[in-house]
Image (cartoon, rainbow, N blue to C red):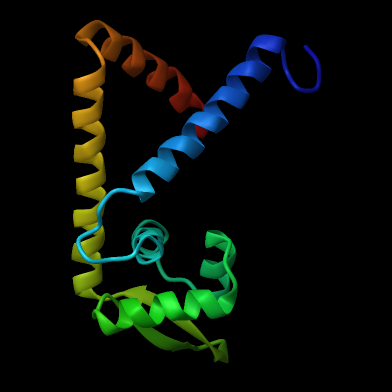
Length: 144
């Protein structure tokens, strides 16, 4: 086995990366009850990862800090985030979800999961879904 794995593993790796990128992009396009795609992405990142800072969020989303500030201002106007001074660095703010933001994050995740389940049911047979579930079980080992 080479540094990059066998040819089959290397091809599977490329295909998986492309699949996950495409699925992530498709899910970002889903309607988000009044939020922009950027706001929805940040809301879900805070929901999944917890408290963060503007700089960390900007890096994670691949945008400039000024753009992230605008996104956060919109979320704050909607009452979905809260800001507090970082106790270790007073110049920095810690961004967390408000209770309403947590509910909205949960709704967003549930909506995306429901969409994906409907698409899987619509596009695949029961036999194909069994294969997909078996493959997901095997791929789950990568996260451990």
